[in-house]
Image (cartoon, rainbow, N blue to C red; front, side, top):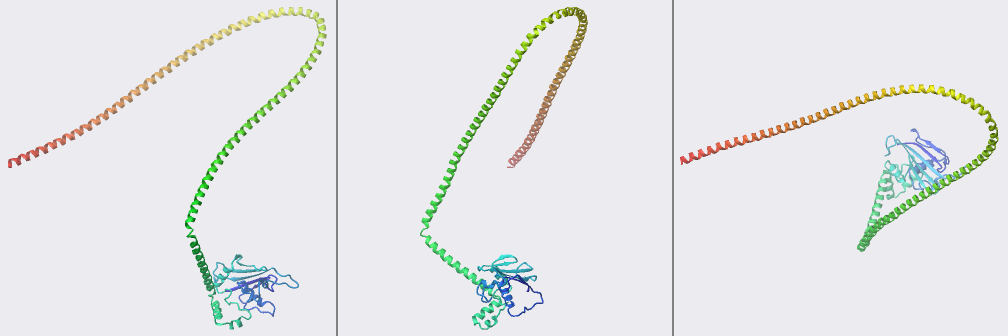
Length: 433
C-alpha cells in the first residue's frame, strides 16, 4: 500500500487549500505542539469514513470545519482528499490511482466522492473493508487510543480484535442481512394479516371486480359510441362547413364578378362621356369647317372658270391617251393568246400525268391481286400439309392397331397351342386309364 497525497481545505485548522505529498521515504510527520499533526491523522481517519466524532476529537460536524480567526472568516465547508497508489491492485477497483474525497457542510450534510464521482458511504466502507482500511480497523491509532484499549473489558476487547482482523465488514453485512430478514418476516406477517382480512371479503371483492370489469367494458363501449357519435357529427359539421365555404366562395366570386362588371360599366360610361365630349368638340370643329367651306365655295366658283379652260386642254390630252390605250389593248390581246397556248400545253401535260397515275394504279391492283393469289396458295399448301400430317398420324395409329392385333393373334396362337397340348395330355391320360 502506498499513500501518495493528502489534500485538506477548511478542515479544522487548515483554512486554505493544503496538499501533502508523501514520497516513499517519508515515515513520520513531526512538528511543535499545536502545529496540526493530530489534525492530519484525524483528517485521514475522517476521509476514510469515520462516523464517531469522539475519536475525531469533536462533538458535531461543525467541529470539523474551520471556525475562523481574527484574520480569516470561518469556512462553510470542510473537504479532504486522499490519494492511494493502486498499481498493484490491492484495492478492488479498476484504477491505478484511487482518490477518495469527503465533504462536510455546516447543515450537517456529508458527501463522498470516488475519483470525482459521487458515491454512498456504504460504497466507501465496502471498498476499504475488503483491504483492511475500514473505519474501525485501527490502522490509524489516535491520541489516548492505546490507554483506552488497555482499559477495555473482555467483550469490548473481542470487538477490537475482530475489527483489527478485518471481520467487522462481514459482521456489518450479517447485521444488515438479519435486519432485512427481520423486516421481511414482519412484511410477511403483515401480508398474512391482510390476506386473513381479505378472505371473508373475497366473494364481495370478486363481485366488485366483475362489476368493475363490466364498468370498464361499458365505459369502453360508451367511449367507442361517443367517438362514433361525435365523429358522425364532426364529419357532418365538416361537410356543412365545406358547403358553407363553397357557397361563400361562390357568393364571393359572384360579388367579384358583379364588382368587375360594375367597374367595366363605369369604364364604359367614362368612355362614353369622353366620346360625347369628343363628338361635341368635333361638332364645333365641323361648324367652323362649314363656315370655312362656305368661304372657299366662293373662291371655287371663281376658280371654275379657270377650270373650264383647263378641261378643254385635258380633253385633247384624253384623245391622245385613247389612241395610246388602243395600242396597249392590241398588245394585251397578243399576250392573252400566248397565255391560252401555254394553258393548253399545261392541260396536255396534266392529261399525260393522269394517264401515268392510272397505269400505276392498275399495276398496284395487279400486284395486290398476285399477293392475294399467293396468300391463297400458301393457305392451300398449309391445308395440304395439315392433311398430310393427319394422314401420317392416321397411318401411325393404324400401324399401332395392326401391331396390337398381331400381338393379340400371336397370343391367341400361343393359347391355341397350349390348349392343343392340354387336349393331347388329356387324351393320353384317358388312354392310359
